[in-house]
Amino acid sequence: MTETMNALVLDLVEWIAREPRPYSEVIETWRTSCPRLTIWEDAVDGGYVARRPVAGVGVSVAITEAGKELLRAHGRLV
Image (cartoon, rainbow, N blue to C red; front, side, top):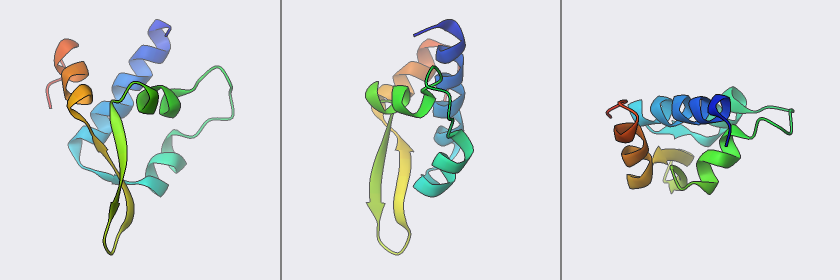
């Protein structure tokens, strides 16, 4: 992962860490058509965020323990 992509993954994980977000909001906000900027996919593949069904809400995206560790390692405490 390049430094730019790493920084963007950190930004995404930090944004989600503030509060779980609806999946639709995450995809709308972080979607890209550039095949070289796979921020959402990198965050999911790294295990930093996860989708979870929430009754009455639909699918929500929340930070995982690995995501918390990533933020701590980069000085972006949750």
